[in-house]
Amino acid sequence: MEITRHTFSEQLETVIKDINESAFIAIDGEFTGLDATASGHASHFDTPEERYNKIRQECSDFLLIQFGLCAFKADEEKRRYEAKPYNFYIFPTPLTRHAPDRRFLCQSSSIDFLCSQGFDFNKLFKEGIPFLIPDEENKLKAELERKHEEARKSGSGLLTSPYQGSAKKNYASIPEEQKPFLDNICEQIAEYLKGQDKEPLVIPPCNAFQRKLIYQTVEERFPDAHIETKTGEKKIRYMEVTRAKSPEEQQKLLKEKQNLEKMELDIQVGFTKVIRAITSSGKLVVGHNMFLDVFHILNNFHGTLPADLEEFKAVTKSVFPRLLDTKLMASTRPLQELISFSGLSDVLQTLQSPPFLPVQVDVAEGFERYHNGAGALHEAGYDALITGRCFATMVNYLGTLQNPPKEFTLPSSHIVEPFVNKLFLMRINDIPYLNLDGPDLRVNREHVFHVTFPKEWKPSDLHALFQPYGAVQISWLTETTAYVALHKKENASMALKALSQHVGSFHVISYAAHHLSKSTRFLSASSPAPLSSPSIPAKRKLKVNEADTVPRKAKRHSLTDEVSPYPVIPEEDESLNDSTTETVQHESCNSDLGQKMEDGETEKTKEKLFDESGTW
Image (cartoon, rainbow, N blue to C red; front, side, top):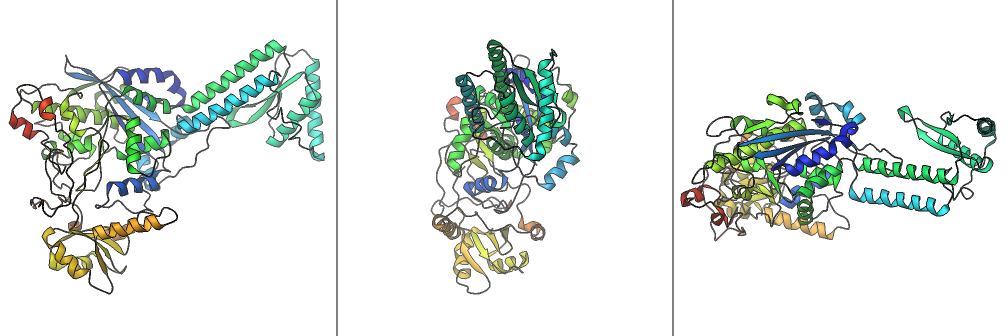
């Protein structure tokens, strides 16, 4: 169901009801941009803190312009779900003079892509649902209450002028060229007040300065007149004059006007109410590769996000107590062994074939837009629907691995818990997720080096430099810097000893030393510095050989399996040497999973499902 500004108020109660009755909610978002790279491209060797701050610094000015929400109601007896997908157009149109007038960024490639997918920008700008963050809402409420309190204390009934109370202080001198204009208006008002016409006198549109002159002149000359500015078609402002009412009638009209102003503010809060309803429900919120979705939801509807990652995690959990990322789920054993590619459309296609049995999901009546599989990828409502379908199917498959197997597994099952509150991190192979529930994984990167070199260098030069120590993976940072990782980790100390002593055109230091120097520079700076140098041009990135990039299907492990800290070489299967590894042992995501399994489950099944080690 498509919801715009004109249908939002009448549909909001139904949307909230569907959220509260759901077994889980799936979401998706579309944005005006994805990647402003002044703080550096996403690197394979970002820490979670670096990745978060790159997104925070460079993506905060993009807007979330379409939000997909699909509420899935479970019928355990019939082993099916009823889905109610909503597609919201969102745009921060200021509906009142005091509402924020936002500025935002657009990324041309993102806008072009949305156009290619049939995105209706006319509908967005004309009918998008407004929103306010809590601080903005509280500020506007306080201002409105102050204004209403002043009107009450003045005892003057209807305010005849927005300048009343300070009219003399702000009195504007009347220029000679405006006197004929004002005389004409005054003649019209005097004639109107003498007559019996019940309809208001409409003063033709004029500019803001002329309206101010009219207000102060009417206040002086016509105490029996009430004048008010209104907004007509195409946002043209005009004025209406009516006869002053009795004190009782004036108070009644004043109350009606104040109630209207409160209602306008409530409308301006807009889509923020949906996010609050999701928060209040406490439901599991499912998304696919949802880090950016979560970031933009919080940034647009909650407020400016903190620089500290741990504070961001706390904010996230206060708004979304339970999140689940289906991309991480599909990229992790045992599902990873069956799902070759983890893009949403690829996952959907894979789940149509054995050993998976698609769950019956019926789109509810009144949601014909997506009946019988109809819909388009990259429309947020449809993407939310298929994300939920994929989640339900994967959960059901995990249920079949229990002993005895379950034919229908609800999302409230304990087998879902290892995936909860872990957001997939793109392109970081040794730290696959951001852990909202605790410390993030710490890994050994002794085999990774930071290299500075002349801008004329190409990937082949870096390969040649490290050739004595084996194959490498290159992750460009700028035109003159890159991270280089050895595939043969055992050669790391030898490579560092030999290359770090070189004095000349290139400079090699360890990954740890580079991070330490960055931290020192950051602490000594008077203001926060960018996390990395300006981004490398796209053409330089395209020169990198396929061997320099992460394999499309690097092996992903279970959230509960021990993994190599840098699993980018498919044929490499060496285990970590505890004596040389600086990883920190973390509490298992599912340390008590064995106790939560149904009675009769075998030890073999427990090992198969999420037998987590300390590394992951």
